[in-house]
Image (cartoon, rainbow, N blue to C red):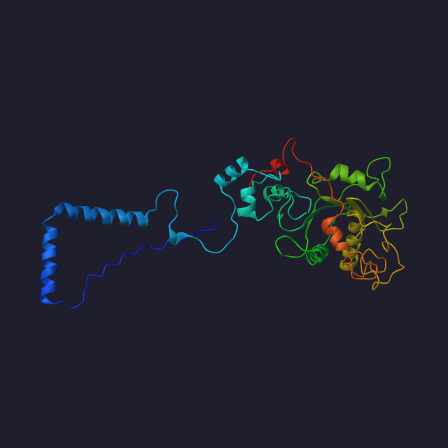
Length: 347
């Protein structure tokens, strides 16, 4: 919360009048003084008037703010209880769970667009659902991923840092004037039981495919998280030659000792989870050089780089723009007959 200090009110009365006067002016002043003293009613009234004026300066009337305390500059503070109550009863043109007044004056979001930054999370949910989507920003693109593992370890800190940095450097613009995407990796369960190879397509039995693990172990699916599983052996389309597999909203992959190899594989399979499919030109192929198709989705770029194409190469597909604006996104389960933010504790 912002704090303000009220400067002391100093009343400086100069009683040392060094101006020279003629005798006549002194006599006139004394006559005036004597006349005033002979009117006690006026003298008392003057004292009362001065007192009232001083009180009005030091203690402004309710509903007004003293000029000396008026803050300068800008900045959005957390809404207090009165603001939250007013928000609940205020006009919400776009139905995102925030009143138009709070969107304009506090959060800087668009009161006519329920998702100002276009990341799939309504503005009200990004503001109020800290427990579900921690550190969400309604003015920056946020992506959340739950990572489980059938092994005793999960993604190393260095791998996570590489992935987060790659998204942070993405050449995409945000409503707040910044660039980049905020990637939130939530490493969750480890030592999950797998029934041998984990397949990319549904199979009979438990623990056989990536869909089993998401259905039985995902704790954040209703919050719109993607799901990635680390495991010992992966099969893509029934072929365990592959070390990773990505399907819409989900992916499975093996983990390696090398930070770059593991991070690059994550970016590749997660690209599939976001909708960068193998039927698109150059994806999962080796016919383009890295110069011709500068992307981790290019088999010639896999394990050598982490980033997606920005559209300036020969293939000309801006994959980062696709990720920011058109990627496949998991559904968010909102409260029945209410906004997504109504399922969360109000800020």
